Amino acid sequence: VSIVEPAENSPAGRLTHGMSAVVAKYHSDNLTQEVLKGLRQKFEDGGCVTKAPPGYRNVSRTRTEKATVVLDQKVAPVMRRLFERYATGEVSLLALAHEFHDHGVKSKRGKPFTAEWVKRTLSHPFYAGHVRYRGEVRPGAHPAIVPQDLFDRVQLVMRRRRCAVGDKGSKFFLLRGLLFCGRCGARLTAEDHPNKRAAYYRCIPALGGKTCEEPYVPVRQLDAQVGALLRFVELTPERKGAA
Image 1: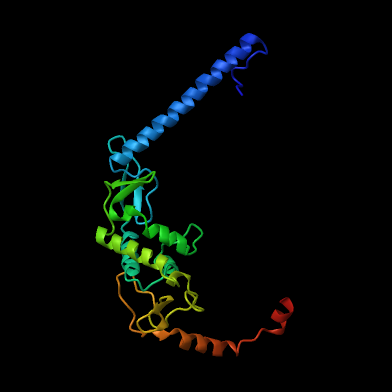
Image 2: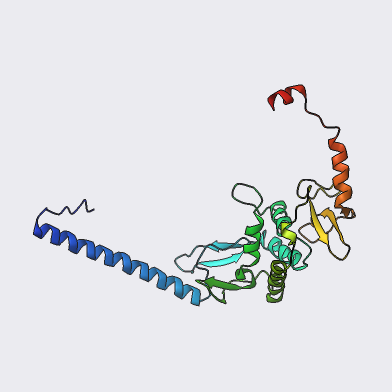
């Protein structure tokens, strides 16, 4: 509806209104086409057409420099470490979500990311130095955080887990992500070890790959210890009334 150019309720007014609408539609469609052409050209040049994922920072263009993507020196090492951790095949997506959180990579609300978000992140070719646009993938102009062989190993682990029954990422461990190590202070995660036919709690490694000297604890043993402690926990009369 045009406010600045009202049309009279007459044949001439309706003609003017129709012509104005057609011209406005043309400008809108043409602008959309030009934007898509610009995005396509940027993609073909190896540029990032969307907001860069965690581990990178978007640098806005200036009068003399084009918009670029650079490494986030704080988060990039965390991202590489998480790719390395998942490539071992001994850690679940949920455990990695907690590792993201412990190393400062968290959602806007300050909470851990979901396992599905971690899965999409580890599948993003951007980390291997490629850009993706409308299903196409091409070499990017940005620096890679992980080498191509590491990225390929991560994708292989994901494919194998999709085919296997009992994906580690779907297994439930009672205390995973709830307890912290008394020696190093890191959050405890849980992993299945098919070779040993047992599951264990252990500390999440530090950013530099340093591991705690505390040995792995069998899941059954730690669950039983916490269960025994809970027998001595009782609600006060006030709490019982509130419940």
